[in-house]
Image (tube, rainbow, N blue to C red; front, side):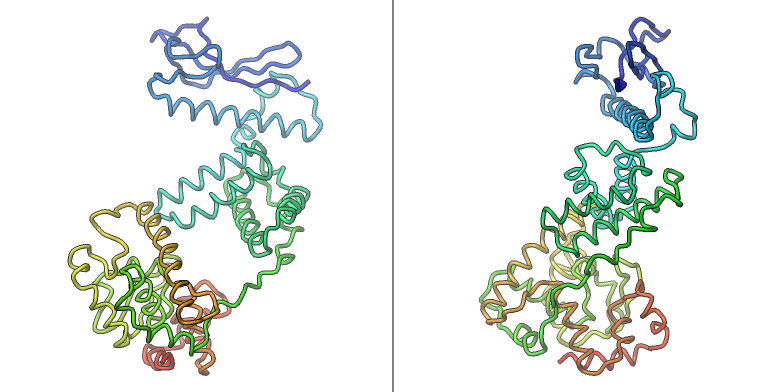
Length: 405
């Protein structure tokens, strides 16, 4: 018979402050064991029928968080014992050694890591783990009440089979498993998982095809977009055209980096900025075409502090506010770019990100050294190109940029 785990307000024991302690209650085979959570509250704030704090309970959010974590921890210990076919009593679950009670569930670990990333301003990165958690919920259930040792090769095979059944693309599956592997490795560092039990020793991500559809446009298609007269188009369409063009003229700069540019990033006719994704420094000459685009937003720059009317330093203060604004606008700009492509009879998909791929492809087809392209793109995280990064000076990169037109 499985144990029943709950939290109760132990009102038969009133403390000196008039409150009753909250206790973890584990019942199995008619025998009950209790262990304090280290917190207490006035019994009048406890719903004894539902075993939870009432809506008017002071510090309710904090108390609910403590209760939820405790339930997940002991349920995880219970599941771990059952997975190993161990016979146990209610008191034995509570008597687990301190080292084992420090284990956290996959749910807790992901939730904590997501919050930590957001607290550190890495909102974009946090969404990778948030998306993984959501997908694991859909696969495994609403709560991931399992320890990391339960994430084994069999688990990975079942997860993969579920995604294939639901027609996930290989690139998407690779994305989720890459994030799951990173999560497992972080759990190893935190002593919540065993390195020798990692499923990724045997379960290789090379099984997934990571080839993506061609994203780059031909030089002719890019020129059609650059030369398009947008004077009679909507303000949003003109912004989409300007962002695409600026990205192409300026080393394939990503939308999030475009959004964060300020007048301080332009120094002596050069665009110098730190990439949001990798924090690598980029230093590129600004072509006259790029300068002309910037000048169109001079009034906005003085008012809102950014080069483009994407972020506003009076409204978008926190990393989350900035991230949500850029993500929302990205969708809007891409819709406008799709319309522009249709008007120009360009069959390829046109998005803000395509400008980055097109920049690299046009230079490559023009015979520019791939190392120079890598430096312009800021691909400091790619080992095969890192050896080139220190070998090209600004003059070489500037010369390569002339091949864009």
